[in-house]
Length: 365
Image (tube, rainbow, N blue to C red; front, side):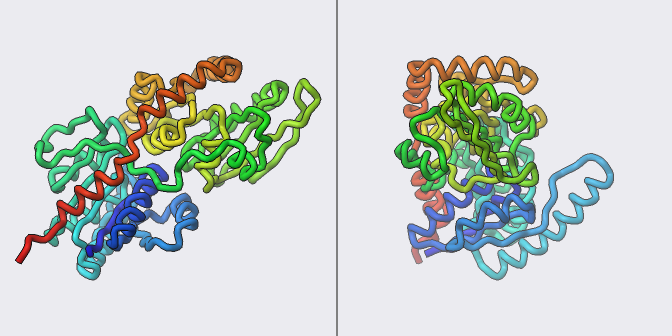
C-alpha cells in the first residue's frame, strides 16, 4: 500500500476534509501524514484524532504590507526546507493539497522530487494557492460547475468536499442530551466556523432574552480566545427554564447540527458541506473580508439550491426578523431539509479515493 502527504492546515475548512481523506486512505490500507499549521485552532481540532499522524510545518499567509510580506517569505522558505525533508524521508506516492498557506511549500517540494500532486478546492471561487499551483498538479478537484483557466480537461475532476465520517445526522433527542439541551424545546445554533465570528457572538448575546422568551434554546460556538465557556438558565414566557450555552470550541459538530432546528453561520465550503450532510436549515452571513469574496459565491449557490437563506452581516435587523419567522414556520424548515437531503453527495470521498489510487498506481513491471 501507499503513503500520502496531505497539506491541510490553517483553518477548519482545510483541516476537516484533510482528516476525512486521511481516515479514508487508512481504511483502504494506506498511510497518511497530515501537514498542519502552527495555529491554535489546528492544535485544538486534532486532539480528537490521536490515531492520525500530524506534522506542524512553518507557514504564514500572504500579506502586502512589508512586515507581513517578510514574515510570509521567511516562513514559507522554512516550510519549503521542512517539506523537502519530509518528501525525501517519507517517499510519498502522492501529495494532496487543500489550499491555504501551508500548501505551496509541499507542492513545490513534490514537483522537484517528481511526486504526483493533487489539489482540492472546495470553494466556488478557487483560492490563491490553488490558482498558483494548479499547473504543477496531475489532478485538480473543483466543485461541480466550476472550472479553472489553464487546467486541462484530463487533469480536472468535479467533486464535492470530503466530509468526516463522524459528521452524520443523529437522532435529535440523543444529540440534545449530548449537548445538555432540552429535546422538547427549539434550538438555535450559532456556528461561525472554526474560528468563530464576533459579530454573530454579539448578536446572540443581544437577542438572547428575546430568544429565551419564545422558549428557544441557544448553543453558541464563540471561537477560541473569544470568551470562556458559559451556561445560562433563563425563563421563557411560559415561566419554564430555557438554556443558553456558550463554548469556545465544539468537537461534537454532528450533535450540534443534529440538535439544531436552525443554524446561523458563515458560508465557508466546509460549513456548508456539514450543513448539507446533517440536513440542518441555516441562515448564512458571508464573511465580507474572505479572500476573493469566496464566501459570497458559496452563499449564493447555497441559496440558489433552496438550501438556506443568505443575509449580509450589515443587516442584523433582517437576521433577527428571519430567525423568528423561520421558528414559527415548521413547513418551511421541513422544505429546506428536503432540499438539503437532495444535495448530499455521500460518495464524494470514495470517488476521490478511487481517483487518487488510480493516479498514484505504479505501472506493472
